[in-house]
Length: 379
Image 1 (cartoon, rainbow, N blue to C red):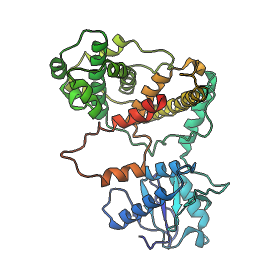
Image 2 (image 1 turned 120 degrees about the vertical axis):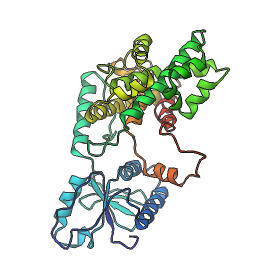
Image 3 (image 1 turned 180 degrees about the vertical axis):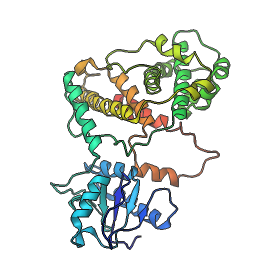
Image 4 (image 1 turned 90 degrees about the horizontal axis):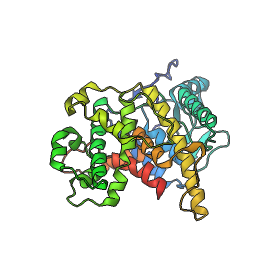
């Protein structure tokens, strides 16, 4: 494949409907193909060489992370009269073109990114139609609540790109958050609960704890400062409850949730029945919530950056009455459920990392979501 004229990298599976001789072999992710792995190594090397300040670098990295299909024409699409057929298909498949010579092109053949970080003025990073429509709806909703969206924030994944975690994993994560939030509340309220009894009450929740959560939960002398951090997981838990259909709606993030209201539904069922009976909301609902919350997060982030430049401890108040910590916890929850943002480079690093002593829990990357959306906002 390294000697190929190039290839299409699509995030939506679409079979090219082109006349011979341009109907070609399609390589799907998950197929063991050494030549594809070699090509992926070339992409990783290329992305690592691009100036990090390039505005398109992150978007290309996310596009590669969402890759669902690789198409290898025998003839480069720009070298035959049927170019318009390929362009039409590429927009539908949300595909970009890798030239094989350290350049990515958009579906129309415009330069998206080269080794110097260059992008053609007319180039367009492709996004699915429903993703762009979702972005526009989110922006309208924010403006209706007197919140001006931040320009340049891209859409989240489209429906056909979505890669949601299973209802079982989402329910297990809710149980884990319940454990750490209740333990934090008990510590701050000076009425510590028995860790052994909590573990016995929710064994599946204990198994689903992330490394950082387990360290806090198992600590014999927990730091009250850490308890102040972990008690905010109630807000993330409320978002998981909404995603699982336990909570009817997501309120506007301007007021902290009532903790007793969050705890109550977690006590009604034993772990096994909780995991088996809960089902996630439709993918569209989760993506809608993710997109809107992402835009609120950027509003809060911009406000914090402006406050930092003015040497203020924090912004006086955010538009629409929104609370930054609630938005951050909510976004971490939604991002984890939706595997967002995808990262080709991070996935490559995970594959090449030394093997651990046991299988990696799907809950270990929860800590990364917290770092990305909660800790980063208040750094």
